[in-house]
Image (cartoon, rainbow over all chains, first blue to last red):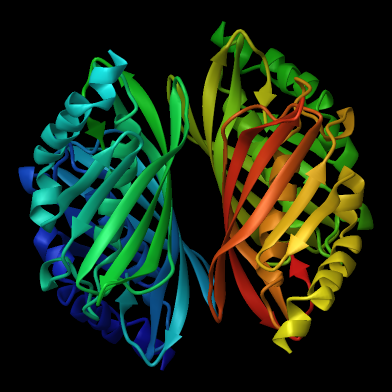
Length: 150
Length: 150
Length: 150
Length: 150
Protein backbone atom coordinates (compact mmCIF):
# COMPACT_ATOMS: atom_id res chain seq x y z
CA UNK A 1 0.00 0.00 0.00
CA UNK A 2 1.24 3.41 -0.74
CA UNK A 3 0.02 4.66 2.63
CA UNK A 4 2.05 1.94 4.28
CA UNK A 5 5.06 2.81 2.22
CA UNK A 6 5.08 6.48 2.97
CA UNK A 7 4.13 6.04 6.56
CA UNK A 8 5.71 4.28 9.50
CA UNK A 9 6.57 1.13 7.59
CA UNK A 10 8.59 3.07 5.00
CA UNK A 11 10.58 4.72 7.73
CA UNK A 12 11.09 1.41 9.54
CA UNK A 13 12.38 -0.18 6.37
CA UNK A 14 14.98 2.56 6.03
CA UNK A 15 16.01 2.38 9.68
CA UNK A 16 16.38 -1.41 9.42
CA UNK A 17 18.48 -1.13 6.26
CA UNK A 18 20.67 1.63 7.73
CA UNK A 19 21.33 -0.49 10.82
CA UNK A 20 22.85 -3.17 8.56
CA UNK A 21 25.33 -0.80 6.89
CA UNK A 22 28.57 -1.67 8.67
CA UNK A 23 30.30 1.38 7.24
CA UNK A 24 27.82 3.78 8.83
CA UNK A 25 28.52 2.26 12.27
CA UNK A 26 32.27 2.34 11.60
CA UNK A 27 32.06 6.05 10.75
CA UNK A 28 29.83 6.71 13.76
CA UNK A 29 27.06 8.05 11.51
CA UNK A 30 23.41 8.02 12.56
CA UNK A 31 20.07 8.49 10.86
CA UNK A 32 18.26 11.75 11.49
CA UNK A 33 14.78 12.54 10.24
CA UNK A 34 13.21 10.26 7.61
CA UNK A 35 10.20 11.48 5.61
CA UNK A 36 9.05 10.52 2.10
CA UNK A 37 11.68 11.78 -0.33
CA UNK A 38 13.90 13.26 2.41
CA UNK A 39 16.49 11.53 4.61
CA UNK A 40 19.07 13.02 6.97
CA UNK A 41 22.34 11.40 8.10
CA UNK A 42 24.50 12.86 10.86
CA UNK A 43 28.22 12.49 11.47
CA UNK A 44 30.24 13.75 14.43
CA UNK A 45 33.74 14.89 13.43
CA UNK A 46 36.55 12.97 15.13
CA UNK A 47 40.09 11.86 14.30
CA UNK A 48 38.62 8.53 13.12
CA UNK A 49 36.96 10.18 10.10
CA UNK A 50 39.53 12.90 9.43
CA UNK A 51 42.08 13.65 6.77
CA UNK A 52 45.57 14.86 7.66
CA UNK A 53 44.57 18.45 8.46
CA UNK A 54 41.89 17.39 10.94
CA UNK A 55 38.86 18.11 8.74
CA UNK A 56 36.36 15.37 8.01
CA UNK A 57 37.71 13.39 5.04
CA UNK A 58 35.93 13.89 1.71
CA UNK A 59 35.42 10.12 1.66
CA UNK A 60 33.39 10.26 4.88
CA UNK A 61 31.44 13.31 3.67
CA UNK A 62 30.71 11.46 0.42
CA UNK A 63 29.69 8.30 2.24
CA UNK A 64 27.00 9.99 4.32
CA UNK A 65 25.84 12.18 1.40
CA UNK A 66 25.59 9.15 -0.89
CA UNK A 67 23.62 7.20 1.73
CA UNK A 68 21.31 10.15 2.44
CA UNK A 69 20.54 10.48 -1.28
CA UNK A 70 20.08 6.73 -1.67
CA UNK A 71 17.71 6.43 1.27
CA UNK A 72 15.73 9.45 0.05
CA UNK A 73 15.25 7.50 -3.19
CA UNK A 74 14.36 4.31 -1.31
CA UNK A 75 11.76 6.19 0.73
CA UNK A 76 9.67 6.60 -2.44
CA UNK A 77 9.98 2.99 -3.62
CA UNK A 78 7.19 0.45 -3.12
CA UNK A 79 7.90 -2.45 -0.76
CA UNK A 80 9.98 -5.15 -2.43
CA UNK A 81 11.99 -2.70 -4.52
CA UNK A 82 15.43 -1.49 -3.54
CA UNK A 83 17.75 1.08 -5.05
CA UNK A 84 21.35 0.94 -6.18
CA UNK A 85 23.64 3.97 -6.60
CA UNK A 86 25.05 3.75 -10.13
CA UNK A 87 27.01 7.00 -10.01
CA UNK A 88 27.36 10.18 -8.02
CA UNK A 89 29.16 13.48 -8.26
CA UNK A 90 30.10 15.65 -5.32
CA UNK A 91 31.39 19.20 -5.09
CA UNK A 92 33.29 19.97 -1.92
CA UNK A 93 32.87 23.70 -1.34
CA UNK A 94 34.19 24.25 2.19
CA UNK A 95 36.18 22.27 4.79
CA UNK A 96 33.97 19.87 6.75
CA UNK A 97 34.65 21.19 10.22
CA UNK A 98 32.21 21.72 13.07
CA UNK A 99 30.24 20.14 15.88
CA UNK A 100 28.11 18.05 13.56
CA UNK A 101 28.08 17.28 9.84
CA UNK A 102 24.57 16.75 8.46
CA UNK A 103 23.77 15.30 5.02
CA UNK A 104 20.24 15.93 3.76
CA UNK A 105 19.18 13.81 0.81
CA UNK A 106 16.15 14.52 -1.34
CA UNK A 107 14.64 13.13 -4.53
CA UNK A 108 14.77 15.45 -7.55
CA UNK A 109 13.03 13.15 -10.05
CA UNK A 110 11.69 9.68 -9.44
CA UNK A 111 11.52 7.40 -12.49
CA UNK A 112 10.59 3.80 -13.14
CA UNK A 113 14.17 2.63 -13.72
CA UNK A 114 16.26 5.62 -12.65
CA UNK A 115 15.84 8.16 -9.85
CA UNK A 116 17.80 11.39 -9.55
CA UNK A 117 18.57 12.48 -6.00
CA UNK A 118 20.67 15.17 -4.38
CA UNK A 119 22.21 15.64 -0.96
CA UNK A 120 23.46 18.83 0.61
CA UNK A 121 25.97 18.48 3.42
CA UNK A 122 26.17 21.14 6.11
CA UNK A 123 28.62 21.78 8.95
CA UNK A 124 26.81 22.88 12.10
CA UNK A 125 28.55 25.15 14.58
CA UNK A 126 27.14 27.38 17.31
CA UNK A 127 23.64 26.85 15.97
CA UNK A 128 24.58 27.93 12.44
CA UNK A 129 24.87 25.85 9.28
CA UNK A 130 27.34 26.20 6.44
CA UNK A 131 27.16 24.31 3.15
CA UNK A 132 30.21 22.07 2.73
CA UNK A 133 29.21 19.78 -0.14
CA UNK A 134 26.61 19.11 -2.81
CA UNK A 135 26.09 15.59 -4.19
CA UNK A 136 24.00 14.45 -7.17
CA UNK A 137 23.32 10.72 -7.55
CA UNK A 138 21.66 8.39 -10.03
CA UNK A 139 19.83 5.50 -8.37
CA UNK A 140 18.62 2.41 -10.19
CA UNK A 141 15.56 0.55 -8.95
CA UNK A 142 16.15 -3.14 -8.30
CA UNK A 143 13.40 -5.69 -7.94
CA UNK A 144 13.28 -8.15 -5.11
CA UNK A 145 15.96 -6.49 -3.04
CA UNK A 146 15.08 -4.25 -0.20
CA UNK A 147 17.39 -1.48 0.80
CA UNK A 148 20.04 0.72 -0.68
CA UNK A 149 22.97 -0.96 -2.39
CA UNK A 150 25.60 1.70 -1.95
CA UNK B 1 64.53 19.70 -6.82
CA UNK B 2 62.50 17.70 -9.17
CA UNK B 3 64.65 14.63 -8.60
CA UNK B 4 63.92 14.94 -4.91
CA UNK B 5 60.27 15.36 -5.60
CA UNK B 6 59.85 12.42 -7.86
CA UNK B 7 62.20 10.20 -5.96
CA UNK B 8 62.25 8.83 -2.49
CA UNK B 9 61.31 12.13 -0.84
CA UNK B 10 58.15 12.44 -2.93
CA UNK B 11 57.08 8.99 -1.92
CA UNK B 12 57.93 9.63 1.71
CA UNK B 13 55.86 12.78 1.69
CA UNK B 14 52.85 10.81 0.47
CA UNK B 15 53.38 7.99 2.97
CA UNK B 16 53.65 10.53 5.80
CA UNK B 17 50.49 12.33 4.71
CA UNK B 18 48.57 9.07 4.30
CA UNK B 19 49.57 7.97 7.80
CA UNK B 20 47.83 11.09 9.16
CA UNK B 21 44.49 10.36 7.48
CA UNK B 22 42.45 8.95 10.34
CA UNK B 23 39.73 7.76 7.96
CA UNK B 24 42.13 5.50 6.05
CA UNK B 25 43.13 3.77 9.31
CA UNK B 26 39.48 3.51 10.35
CA UNK B 27 38.63 1.83 7.04
CA UNK B 28 41.69 -0.43 7.28
CA UNK B 29 43.06 0.94 3.99
CA UNK B 30 46.76 0.86 3.17
CA UNK B 31 49.02 2.48 0.60
CA UNK B 32 50.29 0.27 -2.21
CA UNK B 33 52.77 1.37 -4.83
CA UNK B 34 53.60 5.08 -5.15
CA UNK B 35 55.31 6.37 -8.30
CA UNK B 36 55.17 9.82 -9.91
CA UNK B 37 51.61 10.35 -11.14
CA UNK B 38 50.38 6.95 -9.91
CA UNK B 39 49.25 5.89 -6.43
CA UNK B 40 47.55 2.70 -5.26
CA UNK B 41 45.34 2.26 -2.18
CA UNK B 42 44.19 -1.14 -0.95
CA UNK B 43 41.16 -2.07 1.10
CA UNK B 44 40.25 -5.45 2.54
CA UNK B 45 36.49 -6.11 2.50
CA UNK B 46 34.98 -6.68 5.94
CA UNK B 47 31.68 -6.04 7.70
CA UNK B 48 33.18 -2.77 8.99
CA UNK B 49 33.18 -1.23 5.50
CA UNK B 50 30.09 -2.94 4.10
CA UNK B 51 26.61 -1.91 3.10
CA UNK B 52 23.59 -4.02 4.03
CA UNK B 53 24.13 -6.73 1.39
CA UNK B 54 27.71 -7.39 2.45
CA UNK B 55 29.45 -5.62 -0.45
CA UNK B 56 31.94 -2.86 0.25
CA UNK B 57 29.94 0.38 0.66
CA UNK B 58 30.14 2.90 -2.18
CA UNK B 59 31.30 5.41 0.42
CA UNK B 60 34.35 3.29 1.25
CA UNK B 61 35.06 2.64 -2.45
CA UNK B 62 34.81 6.39 -3.08
CA UNK B 63 37.03 7.23 -0.14
CA UNK B 64 39.96 5.10 -1.34
CA UNK B 65 39.44 6.12 -4.98
CA UNK B 66 39.36 9.82 -4.06
CA UNK B 67 42.51 9.46 -1.95
CA UNK B 68 44.31 7.50 -4.68
CA UNK B 69 43.50 10.22 -7.23
CA UNK B 70 44.48 12.98 -4.80
CA UNK B 71 47.82 11.40 -3.93
CA UNK B 72 48.55 10.79 -7.61
CA UNK B 73 48.10 14.54 -8.07
CA UNK B 74 50.23 15.32 -5.04
CA UNK B 75 53.01 13.09 -6.34
CA UNK B 76 53.58 15.59 -9.17
CA UNK B 77 53.53 18.72 -6.98
CA UNK B 78 56.72 20.47 -5.90
CA UNK B 79 57.55 20.40 -2.19
CA UNK B 80 55.53 22.97 -0.25
CA UNK B 81 52.44 22.61 -2.42
CA UNK B 82 49.49 20.45 -1.48
CA UNK B 83 46.32 19.52 -3.29
CA UNK B 84 42.66 19.78 -2.39
CA UNK B 85 39.86 17.74 -4.00
CA UNK B 86 37.28 20.25 -5.18
CA UNK B 87 34.94 17.74 -6.79
CA UNK B 88 34.78 14.15 -7.96
CA UNK B 89 32.45 11.90 -9.87
CA UNK B 90 32.33 8.14 -9.54
CA UNK B 91 30.59 5.46 -11.57
CA UNK B 92 29.95 2.23 -9.71
CA UNK B 93 29.86 -0.48 -12.36
CA UNK B 94 29.94 -3.73 -10.36
CA UNK B 95 29.53 -4.81 -6.72
CA UNK B 96 32.74 -4.32 -4.72
CA UNK B 97 33.23 -7.87 -3.57
CA UNK B 98 36.44 -9.88 -3.40
CA UNK B 99 39.61 -10.60 -1.48
CA UNK B 100 41.01 -7.14 -1.99
CA UNK B 101 39.74 -3.85 -3.42
CA UNK B 102 42.46 -1.82 -5.12
CA UNK B 103 42.12 1.83 -6.19
CA UNK B 104 44.69 3.03 -8.72
CA UNK B 105 44.91 6.80 -9.12
CA UNK B 106 46.66 8.54 -11.98
CA UNK B 107 47.06 12.08 -13.25
CA UNK B 108 45.32 12.86 -16.55
CA UNK B 109 46.35 16.51 -16.85
CA UNK B 110 48.45 18.51 -14.45
CA UNK B 111 47.86 22.27 -14.46
CA UNK B 112 49.13 25.23 -12.47
CA UNK B 113 45.91 25.71 -10.51
CA UNK B 114 43.86 22.61 -11.35
CA UNK B 115 44.84 18.99 -11.91
CA UNK B 116 42.58 16.34 -13.40
CA UNK B 117 43.07 12.85 -12.00
CA UNK B 118 41.30 9.53 -12.34
CA UNK B 119 41.14 6.38 -10.26
CA UNK B 120 40.02 2.94 -11.32
CA UNK B 121 38.91 0.59 -8.58
CA UNK B 122 39.27 -3.16 -9.05
CA UNK B 123 38.06 -6.15 -7.06
CA UNK B 124 40.70 -8.88 -6.88
CA UNK B 125 39.67 -12.50 -6.59
CA UNK B 126 41.60 -15.69 -7.34
CA UNK B 127 44.32 -13.68 -9.04
CA UNK B 128 41.90 -11.90 -11.36
CA UNK B 129 40.81 -8.28 -11.39
CA UNK B 130 37.41 -6.83 -12.20
CA UNK B 131 36.65 -3.13 -12.62
CA UNK B 132 34.16 -1.98 -9.98
CA UNK B 133 34.37 1.81 -10.20
CA UNK B 134 35.80 4.74 -12.15
CA UNK B 135 36.39 8.10 -10.45
CA UNK B 136 37.34 11.44 -12.01
CA UNK B 137 38.52 14.22 -9.68
CA UNK B 138 39.48 17.88 -9.93
CA UNK B 139 42.32 18.82 -7.58
CA UNK B 140 43.29 22.38 -6.71
CA UNK B 141 46.89 23.20 -5.84
CA UNK B 142 47.30 24.95 -2.50
CA UNK B 143 50.43 26.80 -1.47
CA UNK B 144 52.09 26.27 1.85
CA UNK B 145 50.18 23.15 2.76
CA UNK B 146 51.66 19.75 2.27
CA UNK B 147 49.43 16.82 1.63
CA UNK B 148 46.05 16.02 0.22
CA UNK B 149 43.05 17.81 1.71
CA UNK B 150 40.36 15.31 0.94
CA UNK C 1 30.84 49.38 -7.39
CA UNK C 2 28.71 46.56 -6.25
CA UNK C 3 25.54 48.51 -6.98
CA UNK C 4 26.75 48.92 -10.54
CA UNK C 5 27.55 45.26 -10.78
CA UNK C 6 24.24 43.95 -9.58
CA UNK C 7 22.25 46.55 -11.40
CA UNK C 8 21.81 47.47 -15.00
CA UNK C 9 25.52 47.36 -15.83
CA UNK C 10 25.85 43.76 -14.62
CA UNK C 11 22.99 42.73 -16.83
CA UNK C 12 24.37 44.65 -19.78
CA UNK C 13 27.72 42.94 -19.37
CA UNK C 14 26.03 39.55 -19.57
CA UNK C 15 23.89 40.52 -22.56
CA UNK C 16 27.00 41.84 -24.38
CA UNK C 17 28.96 38.66 -23.65
CA UNK C 18 26.07 36.41 -24.69
CA UNK C 19 25.75 38.29 -27.99
CA UNK C 20 29.36 37.31 -28.79
CA UNK C 21 28.78 33.58 -28.28
CA UNK C 22 28.52 32.32 -31.84
CA UNK C 23 27.23 28.94 -30.68
CA UNK C 24 24.19 30.47 -28.97
CA UNK C 25 23.21 32.20 -32.23
CA UNK C 26 23.85 29.00 -34.18
CA UNK C 27 21.54 27.08 -31.83
CA UNK C 28 18.94 29.87 -31.95
CA UNK C 29 19.17 30.34 -28.16
CA UNK C 30 18.26 33.62 -26.51
CA UNK C 31 18.77 35.19 -23.10
CA UNK C 32 15.74 35.37 -20.83
CA UNK C 33 15.71 37.10 -17.46
CA UNK C 34 19.01 38.12 -15.88
CA UNK C 35 19.17 38.96 -12.17
CA UNK C 36 22.07 38.67 -9.71
CA UNK C 37 22.86 34.97 -9.33
CA UNK C 38 20.13 33.86 -11.75
CA UNK C 39 20.20 33.69 -15.56
CA UNK C 40 17.74 32.12 -17.98
CA UNK C 41 18.48 30.87 -21.52
CA UNK C 42 15.73 29.81 -23.94
CA UNK C 43 15.88 27.42 -26.87
CA UNK C 44 13.16 26.65 -29.40
CA UNK C 45 13.17 23.00 -30.50
CA UNK C 46 13.75 22.50 -34.23
CA UNK C 47 15.38 19.92 -36.49
CA UNK C 48 18.57 22.02 -36.35
CA UNK C 49 19.14 21.16 -32.68
CA UNK C 50 17.67 17.65 -32.67
CA UNK C 51 18.99 14.14 -32.32
CA UNK C 52 17.73 11.34 -34.56
CA UNK C 53 14.40 10.83 -32.75
CA UNK C 54 13.43 14.49 -33.03
CA UNK C 55 14.08 15.48 -29.42
CA UNK C 56 16.47 18.30 -28.62
CA UNK C 57 19.99 16.81 -28.57
CA UNK C 58 21.63 16.43 -25.15
CA UNK C 59 24.49 18.50 -26.53
CA UNK C 60 22.18 21.46 -27.14
CA UNK C 61 20.50 21.01 -23.75
CA UNK C 62 23.95 20.93 -22.13
CA UNK C 63 25.12 23.98 -24.05
CA UNK C 64 22.29 26.22 -22.82
CA UNK C 65 22.43 24.77 -19.30
CA UNK C 66 26.19 25.30 -19.10
CA UNK C 67 25.86 28.88 -20.34
CA UNK C 68 23.00 29.63 -17.95
CA UNK C 69 25.08 28.36 -15.01
CA UNK C 70 28.15 30.25 -16.21
CA UNK C 71 26.32 33.54 -16.63
CA UNK C 72 24.67 33.11 -13.23
CA UNK C 73 28.20 32.89 -11.82
CA UNK C 74 29.37 35.87 -13.87
CA UNK C 75 26.44 37.94 -12.60
CA UNK C 76 28.01 37.90 -9.11
CA UNK C 77 31.54 38.76 -10.24
CA UNK C 78 32.96 42.28 -9.92
CA UNK C 79 33.71 44.14 -13.17
CA UNK C 80 36.99 43.02 -14.72
CA UNK C 81 36.60 39.42 -13.59
CA UNK C 82 35.29 36.68 -15.84
CA UNK C 83 34.47 33.04 -15.22
CA UNK C 84 35.55 29.84 -16.91
CA UNK C 85 33.67 26.53 -16.72
CA UNK C 86 36.20 23.94 -15.54
CA UNK C 87 33.77 21.02 -15.39
CA UNK C 88 30.11 20.21 -15.38
CA UNK C 89 27.86 17.23 -14.87
CA UNK C 90 24.39 16.87 -16.28
CA UNK C 91 21.62 14.38 -15.63
CA UNK C 92 19.12 14.02 -18.46
CA UNK C 93 15.89 12.91 -16.82
CA UNK C 94 13.29 13.26 -19.60
CA UNK C 95 13.25 13.83 -23.37
CA UNK C 96 13.68 17.52 -24.27
CA UNK C 97 10.49 17.99 -26.22
CA UNK C 98 8.08 20.90 -26.18
CA UNK C 99 7.36 24.42 -27.35
CA UNK C 100 10.30 25.92 -25.52
CA UNK C 101 13.27 24.60 -23.57
CA UNK C 102 14.32 26.89 -20.72
CA UNK C 103 17.57 26.59 -18.76
CA UNK C 104 17.66 28.43 -15.42
CA UNK C 105 21.09 28.86 -13.90
CA UNK C 106 21.73 29.85 -10.30
CA UNK C 107 24.71 30.18 -8.01
CA UNK C 108 24.91 27.64 -5.17
CA UNK C 109 28.15 28.88 -3.57
CA UNK C 110 30.30 31.75 -4.67
CA UNK C 111 33.99 31.53 -3.73
CA UNK C 112 37.09 33.58 -4.38
CA UNK C 113 38.59 31.13 -6.88
CA UNK C 114 35.77 28.65 -7.51
CA UNK C 115 32.02 29.10 -7.79
CA UNK C 116 29.50 26.26 -7.75
CA UNK C 117 26.44 26.82 -9.93
CA UNK C 118 23.49 24.72 -11.05
CA UNK C 119 21.04 24.89 -13.91
CA UNK C 120 17.68 23.21 -14.22
CA UNK C 121 16.33 22.72 -17.72
CA UNK C 122 12.58 22.59 -18.29
CA UNK C 123 10.44 21.74 -21.30
CA UNK C 124 7.45 24.07 -21.58
CA UNK C 125 4.24 22.83 -23.17
CA UNK C 126 0.70 24.17 -22.91
CA UNK C 127 1.71 26.45 -20.08
CA UNK C 128 3.22 23.63 -18.04
CA UNK C 129 6.86 22.90 -17.23
CA UNK C 130 8.59 19.57 -16.91
CA UNK C 131 12.13 19.05 -15.64
CA UNK C 132 14.33 17.54 -18.37
CA UNK C 133 17.85 18.04 -17.01
CA UNK C 134 19.90 19.11 -14.00
CA UNK C 135 23.43 20.47 -14.44
CA UNK C 136 26.07 21.22 -11.80
CA UNK C 137 29.10 23.27 -12.83
CA UNK C 138 32.37 24.46 -11.31
CA UNK C 139 33.38 27.92 -12.48
CA UNK C 140 36.82 29.43 -12.00
CA UNK C 141 37.22 33.19 -11.66
CA UNK C 142 39.67 34.71 -14.13
CA UNK C 143 41.17 38.15 -13.74
CA UNK C 144 41.23 40.68 -16.53
CA UNK C 145 38.82 38.81 -18.76
CA UNK C 146 35.21 39.73 -18.93
CA UNK C 147 32.63 37.17 -19.78
CA UNK C 148 32.08 33.46 -19.54
CA UNK C 149 34.66 31.21 -21.14
CA UNK C 150 32.54 28.20 -21.85
CA UNK D 1 24.74 -12.09 -35.59
CA UNK D 2 27.56 -10.64 -33.68
CA UNK D 3 29.79 -10.68 -36.78
CA UNK D 4 27.20 -8.58 -38.55
CA UNK D 5 26.94 -6.23 -35.62
CA UNK D 6 30.61 -5.59 -35.26
CA UNK D 7 31.28 -5.49 -38.93
CA UNK D 8 30.06 -3.32 -41.75
CA UNK D 9 26.42 -3.36 -40.63
CA UNK D 10 27.28 -2.02 -37.19
CA UNK D 11 29.20 0.83 -38.73
CA UNK D 12 26.43 1.56 -41.22
CA UNK D 13 23.89 1.69 -38.44
CA UNK D 14 25.97 4.33 -36.66
CA UNK D 15 26.55 6.35 -39.84
CA UNK D 16 22.80 6.28 -40.59
CA UNK D 17 21.92 7.39 -37.05
CA UNK D 18 24.54 10.15 -37.06
CA UNK D 19 23.19 11.48 -40.36
CA UNK D 20 19.81 12.01 -38.68
CA UNK D 21 21.23 14.13 -35.81
CA UNK D 22 20.31 17.64 -36.91
CA UNK D 23 22.55 19.16 -34.25
CA UNK D 24 25.68 17.49 -35.64
CA UNK D 25 24.98 19.00 -39.08
CA UNK D 26 24.25 22.39 -37.50
CA UNK D 27 27.60 22.29 -35.69
CA UNK D 28 29.36 21.09 -38.84
CA UNK D 29 30.54 17.93 -37.06
CA UNK D 30 31.40 14.76 -38.98
CA UNK D 31 31.97 11.12 -38.10
CA UNK D 32 35.55 9.89 -38.21
CA UNK D 33 36.57 6.29 -37.68
CA UNK D 34 34.01 3.81 -36.32
CA UNK D 35 35.16 0.48 -34.89
CA UNK D 36 33.55 -1.73 -32.22
CA UNK D 37 33.70 0.19 -28.95
CA UNK D 38 35.42 3.24 -30.49
CA UNK D 39 33.90 6.18 -32.37
CA UNK D 40 35.46 9.46 -33.46
CA UNK D 41 33.66 12.76 -34.14
CA UNK D 42 35.39 15.75 -35.72
CA UNK D 43 34.57 19.44 -35.46
CA UNK D 44 36.18 22.33 -37.31
CA UNK D 45 36.43 25.46 -35.16
CA UNK D 46 34.55 28.46 -36.59
CA UNK D 47 32.69 31.49 -35.24
CA UNK D 48 29.48 29.45 -35.50
CA UNK D 49 30.55 27.14 -32.65
CA UNK D 50 32.55 29.64 -30.58
CA UNK D 51 32.15 31.38 -27.25
CA UNK D 52 32.95 35.06 -26.86
CA UNK D 53 36.75 34.67 -26.81
CA UNK D 54 36.82 32.73 -30.07
CA UNK D 55 37.44 29.27 -28.61
CA UNK D 56 35.07 26.43 -29.37
CA UNK D 57 32.20 26.68 -26.85
CA UNK D 58 32.12 24.07 -24.10
CA UNK D 59 28.61 23.23 -25.27
CA UNK D 60 29.90 22.24 -28.70
CA UNK D 61 32.82 20.32 -27.20
CA UNK D 62 30.36 18.50 -24.93
CA UNK D 63 27.98 17.77 -27.78
CA UNK D 64 30.58 15.96 -29.89
CA UNK D 65 32.11 14.23 -26.86
CA UNK D 66 28.70 13.03 -25.68
CA UNK D 67 27.83 11.74 -29.16
CA UNK D 68 31.21 10.02 -29.54
CA UNK D 69 30.71 8.24 -26.20
CA UNK D 70 27.11 7.35 -27.07
CA UNK D 71 27.98 5.91 -30.46
CA UNK D 72 30.88 3.95 -28.95
CA UNK D 73 28.28 2.38 -26.66
CA UNK D 74 25.87 1.78 -29.53
CA UNK D 75 28.62 0.06 -31.54
CA UNK D 76 28.57 -2.80 -29.01
CA UNK D 77 24.77 -3.19 -28.89
CA UNK D 78 22.96 -5.93 -30.79
CA UNK D 79 20.69 -4.85 -33.65
CA UNK D 80 17.34 -3.58 -32.35
CA UNK D 81 18.80 -2.05 -29.21
CA UNK D 82 19.63 1.61 -28.90
CA UNK D 83 21.28 3.65 -26.16
CA UNK D 84 20.24 6.74 -24.27
CA UNK D 85 22.63 9.06 -22.41
CA UNK D 86 21.30 9.35 -18.88
CA UNK D 87 24.08 11.56 -17.55
CA UNK D 88 27.55 12.77 -18.36
CA UNK D 89 30.34 14.72 -16.72
CA UNK D 90 33.00 16.65 -18.57
CA UNK D 91 36.22 18.27 -17.43
CA UNK D 92 37.44 21.08 -19.65
CA UNK D 93 41.20 21.17 -19.19
CA UNK D 94 42.41 23.51 -21.97
CA UNK D 95 40.86 25.98 -24.43
CA UNK D 96 39.43 24.22 -27.50
CA UNK D 97 41.46 25.98 -30.15
CA UNK D 98 43.11 24.54 -33.24
CA UNK D 99 42.63 23.31 -36.78
CA UNK D 100 40.40 20.44 -35.77
CA UNK D 101 38.73 19.26 -32.58
CA UNK D 102 38.47 15.48 -32.35
CA UNK D 103 36.34 13.59 -29.80
CA UNK D 104 37.23 9.91 -29.35
CA UNK D 105 34.64 7.85 -27.53
CA UNK D 106 35.27 4.41 -26.08
CA UNK D 107 33.40 1.92 -23.93
CA UNK D 108 34.81 1.38 -20.44
CA UNK D 109 32.28 -1.21 -19.25
CA UNK D 110 29.37 -2.62 -21.15
CA UNK D 111 26.47 -3.89 -19.04
CA UNK D 112 23.01 -5.28 -19.72
CA UNK D 113 21.15 -2.14 -18.65
CA UNK D 114 23.91 0.44 -18.22
CA UNK D 115 27.11 1.08 -20.18
CA UNK D 116 29.93 3.32 -19.01
CA UNK D 117 31.75 5.19 -21.78
CA UNK D 118 34.36 7.90 -21.95
CA UNK D 119 35.43 10.39 -24.58
CA UNK D 120 38.66 12.34 -24.78
CA UNK D 121 38.61 15.51 -26.84
CA UNK D 122 41.80 16.72 -28.50
CA UNK D 123 42.71 19.93 -30.32
CA UNK D 124 44.86 19.22 -33.37
CA UNK D 125 47.36 21.80 -34.55
CA UNK D 126 50.42 21.42 -36.79
CA UNK D 127 50.16 17.67 -36.58
CA UNK D 128 50.12 17.64 -32.79
CA UNK D 129 47.29 16.82 -30.40
CA UNK D 130 46.48 18.38 -27.05
CA UNK D 131 43.88 17.09 -24.61
CA UNK D 132 41.13 19.66 -24.11
CA UNK D 133 38.38 17.68 -22.38
CA UNK D 134 37.50 14.36 -20.75
CA UNK D 135 33.89 13.16 -20.64
CA UNK D 136 32.40 10.21 -18.74
CA UNK D 137 28.88 9.10 -19.66
CA UNK D 138 26.30 6.59 -18.46
CA UNK D 139 24.28 5.07 -21.30
CA UNK D 140 21.08 3.11 -20.82
CA UNK D 141 20.14 0.37 -23.28
CA UNK D 142 16.69 0.79 -24.81
CA UNK D 143 14.83 -1.97 -26.57
CA UNK D 144 13.24 -1.49 -29.94
CA UNK D 145 14.90 1.80 -30.69
CA UNK D 146 17.90 2.00 -32.89
CA UNK D 147 20.40 4.77 -32.43
CA UNK D 148 21.68 7.06 -29.76
CA UNK D 149 19.16 9.22 -27.92
CA UNK D 150 21.38 12.06 -26.88
